[in-house]
Every structure is written in C-alpha cells, then in structure tokens.
Image (tube, rainbow, N blue to C red):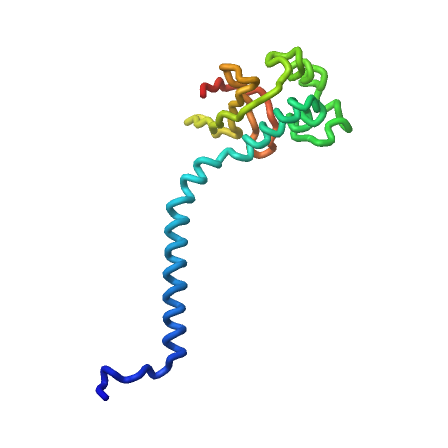
Length: 161
C-alpha cells in the first residue's frame, strides 16, 4: 500500500467537511438569488402599503359603507367619537363627494393603476400619489396618501397613467 492509497484517517470528519461544503454552496446560491431578486421586488412593491389603503377605501365605497370609508380616509377608526376634528371636510361633504351623486357616480368597480412618490429638489415628499381607475372611466382618480399616517386626500399633483 502506498501513501496515495491510504484509507482516510477519520471518515466522520470527511462527512462533516462534505456536509459543510454543501451547506456553504446552498447558502451562496441563496444569497445570489436574494441579491438578484430583492431590488426589483422592492422597486415594484415600494408603495404597496399606500396602494392597499386606497384599495380598502374604494372597496368600502363600493359597498356603500361610507362610515368605514371615512374612517380610512382620515386613518381614524374612532372618528365618530370626535367629529369636531373633521370640520374642514365633514362626513356629509364626504358622502356628497363619494356617494352616488358625486363626481364618479355610484362606484361599482375600481382598479389601482399605480402609484408614484413625487421627487423634488426643494422638498422631500411625505406621501404617495395613487391612481385608481373607477368604473372603467378613462381618467383615473388621483389620491394622495401620507406615508407615515396613511391619511388619504385628493392629490395636489395631477397623475397620468
């Protein structure tokens, strides 16, 4: 028997080394996959929380559940306990705007078209513009959602999607 043909000194140590090599290989593959897929997913879903709030809001309007919709609009589930906070945009005005007599008529369907975080060199944007196509109309409804509080309002920035 020569030196090159000697049996392994510790078969258990060789098994551990082979197992460690397999684990490192799969961890490396997972890291590469994560590095490749994470940026596009982050870019695509960056404004997902704001889009979801608008989707919930419009779903409540479709069900004609205006109290829930107004709560989502103001991000205040207990808005009825302190109505005086909402003197500038009252529940009655909200019903006129979003009810069957409003600009959009009776809302029966909606689709979130997209969202954008406005960029400006002078100010930092605190919210997101979400565009929603209501009742299949050509022009989307542009809603502003504050990123921190999730308060919805009409967008000061026009949107074109």
